[in-house]
Length: 337
Image 1 (cartoon, helix red, strand yellow):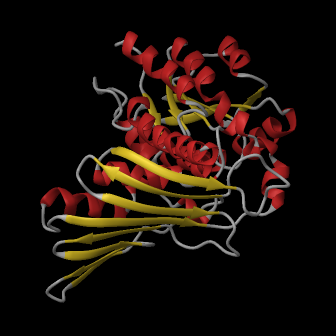
Image 2 (cartoon, one colour):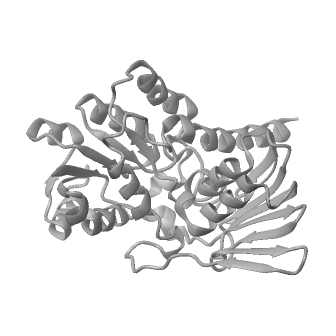
């Protein structure tokens, strides 16, 4: 039996708990502990899950040994908690982004480089497991699409002031590392570099168009990405819309137009149309998170005995973090010149 602990009892913790509960009997996983510095949050999650509540990871690790630690805390706590868990011998599943700052994230990458026998670390870029992402990656790798003339991507969602006032760290750059790009669009940045290759040149701008009185992070961003593959992406994101739109990735290819939008549609030049629908399942989490958390968590647990690192680890997750930070840097340079 693998003993799991969940550190951080916020919104996304529910999705991790649902996955553990769904996979528990099949894979031999049991949630034995939940941790939160807010005693009320820890007690509430303990009552929901039946796991023992603790006020800190240090307190938990002093009381019992766990095999896997799920970290679902604010961004600025990710690295210290991950290092503490790894030092205890526990594997780590870490929510995105890797960290709030590149220098912090590098600490974890360096630790793993220096400790070849360290436990595994997986980072939750679960949208790579979506049907649309998997099929699009297959088509790109097959060469059927031909050359990619260009790409477009968008994340157009909505937020209310209450989203930030309920949990102020979300709108505080010192803790979150940024707004839209770090909290919402980082999944799309990850998909873009996974599908089209790392970005070798990035220009962009960020702004706070709607929530300037509430936060010190951006709610809107646009960027132009040049990928190592030779493809280019025009990206736009905002949290100022009145409703959530589907995340979009569109590829203008030599042999087809490919549209990732709540599934995947491939319109071939010869008139054929191929469609791939996304999976659907009930969840207490937000619907736009998708349903692939469980697939990533399953994959992580099933690979625990493999000698290789998990395929979406800290070094891999550094790429999307660097992309977000490059857009911030570009925006600052344009603002000051």
